[in-house]
Image (cartoon, rainbow, N blue to C red):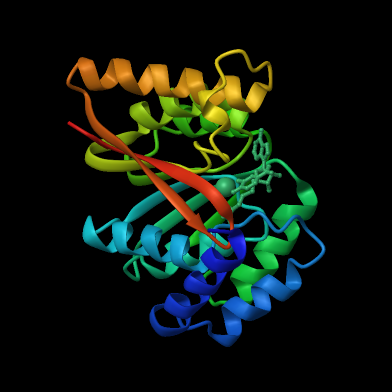
Length: 222
Ligand code: SAH
Ligand code: DHB
Ligand code: MG
């Protein structure tokens, strides 16, 4: 099996289940000069299903890029819902804000510019209401810290999703000094402690598709 086959299968299902509308296609076009590391259509669909299934009204996203997952998640919100997305790159935030404006979602989405760890501090200072869903998808080296914040800011019954925990199986390399691999392994240790403390129920969903071989860590808080 190859990425080519996985992509063809992705496309076959996505054409049927995840119709690409003009606005989302426009957002992707506007982001063409940025890294193409957004979730796939079907992975976006998974996030949307989750958000709808738990009736998410408040979503926190860490890592906006040009707003692809942001738009997909924001569309899953009720009209009075809110999404906050944290982004360190001024250029990425600028493109994302434009895309959200065009998608008619600017009223329910705030893109906060700055390093996510700083923005998270700020959100805590502001005593924000707990989130129903947190999607962690920024710099992987900080995933242990993002996980700690997600535990702190998510309501019981809420869901935390962390993207890119498999990365072609690189997570298995205990000798790796790649900060992203180290971050993912430390994240997993932290989630494991939360599991054994009865604080969360968690799993990892490995995925293949147009984005290669990767996976989501998914946890729900007790
Ligand atoms: N969630 C997006 C993809 C995000 S890509 C989607 O699926 O559509 C990762 C993003 O995280 C990039 O835009 C990058 O600029 C941002 N990022 C990297 N380090 C960051 C940090 N420390 N704080 C906030 N954002 C960061
Ligand atoms: C990268 C980041 C992502 O969030 C992703 O989904 C794929 C790749 C990256 O930094 O290469
Ligand atoms: Mg990702």
